[in-house]
Structures are given as C-alpha cells and as structure tokens.
Image 1 (spheres, rainbow, N blue to C red):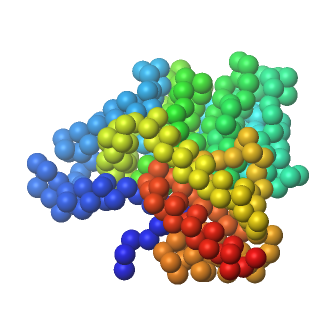
Image 2 (cartoon, rainbow, N blue to C red):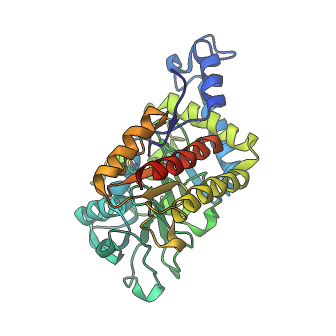
Length: 361
Ligand code: PMP
C-alpha cells in the first residue's frame, strides 16, 4: 500500500525524510553501536542527542536564555494540572479563556487545585470564535491567564494574542507549535504535546520563564509535577521518553533545513488558504469559524447533512485521503494540515471536494 495523505489531528503525518533518517539509524545509531531505543539516557551518546534537540529547538523558536526548555511526559493533559499546581497556591485565583474542549479540560483541572475563573467563553456559539479579552476582564491578582493557542477540535485560533497587561500568559500550543512563528517572549509558559508538529506521542515540551521556577510550590505537589526539579535535572529526573525526544530532535533539524519556522508558516498559510478558498467557493461546504479566527492547522467544514458528511469521509478514504472525520463533539469534517502534510495532499483534497460537489449537489 502506498503512503496515504493522513489528515489526523494527532498523532499525525511526520516528515518522510525524518522517518527515513530514523530508519537508517534505528538499529545502530552512528558511533553508539546500539539503537537509540536501547541506549541508557545517561550515556554520552544520549546526552548529546537531548542537548542537541534542545539547542535546535532554541534556535528555530528563537528561545532566549531567560527561558527553560523541558522535555516531559504525561501529555499536554498533564500540564492542565502541573501549571496550576506550580504557578498558584491553593487560595490563589487563575483565569481561563474557554475556546474549546481542551481549554475547558484545563480549566476544570485548575479548579481542583485553586480558584479557577472562566473569564471568557465561546461555548454558546459552539466555540466558533475567539472571545476578545482585555486586561479589565481579568481577575485581580490572577496568577496567570491560560489560553489554548489553537483549538484542534473546532479549528479556531488566537491569530492575535490577548492583551493581558501584567498578568502572566500561559498557552497550550499543542496543535500549532512550529506551525507558525511565535515570539516566545510574549509568553510566560508554553506547553505542547509533540504528536502533531514535533514527533511521536509521549513527549510534552514546556518552554517557561526561568524566574517561574523559583515560585514557592505547595509541599503536597509531587516531584514529577514540579518544573524546578525537572529543570535542575535537565529533563532527566527520571528516565525521559528517550526515543520521542530523539525523534523530535530530528524533526527540529528538518524544520531548520526547510528554512525555519517562517518558511514553514508560509507553506502552511498557502495550504490553509487553498482549502479555505475551496470551502468558501463551494455550494455545499461551509466552515463554521469566524474568518479572523480560522486556524491554519485544523480546517473544519460541514455540508449540513450528516449522511453526506459520512459519505464524503468514506469516499475520501478510498482514494487515500484518510482521517477526515470531524471530532465527535464538532461533527462534519476536519482536515489537520500540520507541517508534514505536503501541498500535494491539500491539492488532492481540494480536487476531491470539487469532484464530490459536482456528483452530489
Ligand atoms: N491540547 C490540545 C490543543 C490538544 O490538541 C490536545 C490533544 N490533541 C491536548 C491538549 C491533549 O493532549 P494529550 O493527549 O497529549 O494529553
């Protein structure tokens, strides 16, 4: 079977060049005499791998020395707890903007620990837009405002960051990190699961201001949930997800070879525009998201007829365009077009949509 164009929201397509490089090095990593899968995380070969991964990520995201970069486990979902438990005390207040399922989960987890306030929400409109936030909407003395930078399920995105005044900004960038250029200095803490733009599942990257590491943390918080302990051990307090970090490091090198994140963003914007144009010019497909809040990573569309949506997804998969079914909470279709989705994949999808419309309208 040929490789298909996989529009999965994550785990998702990975660059073929990276898969091939990893395949070449899999059994005997150069200079090591064994596979990365078999290597001690304390070995010189592995130390070089993790150090290089961090250095490359710092280069491609232009991360300054004021920020710590951590390679953690537990998925982005673990960050839903780790963020409030380390950045807030039990009596503190933390603010959340609810723009989809993941930011709502994050808000609920924070509420287990401290006083979590939903300062904005677009739930009433099925998360089809990004609510505007101004500093006066934030709680007095809020320890941070948490936003989800890109809503993987509903296909909306903070195309402009909210004005938070002096309140620290925490952002879940799981589905858009390395997909477009971000000024890291605008954030106090960024976290992202790797399984979309960075590599295999099992790795979560955290980029945080070093000064936050010195926060006083409640003694009840387990060591594995403390950023400071993870930072002091260079992400190797315990056995890290060694293979996932190695793989992500290869993806970071690939990003650099493509011309960096700016070049990738340009290509991603081209792909997204192609798809949104096809939707906007079609008589049967609609995108429910406010135009200014559209995501370039996850493009959602519906026909308004569930049977027709199902037919679309089934027929598309027969021609090698797979995993186009929308999330169960959103319905319709979703094309996740992360960094590794080639332009040819989007061209084929757009041609298929056109053909489908002609046969079904
Ligand atoms: N945040 C966002 C934006 C996501 O898309 C996802 C998962 N796809 C998560 C959080 C949860 O990530 P994980 O499964 O790694 O816990």
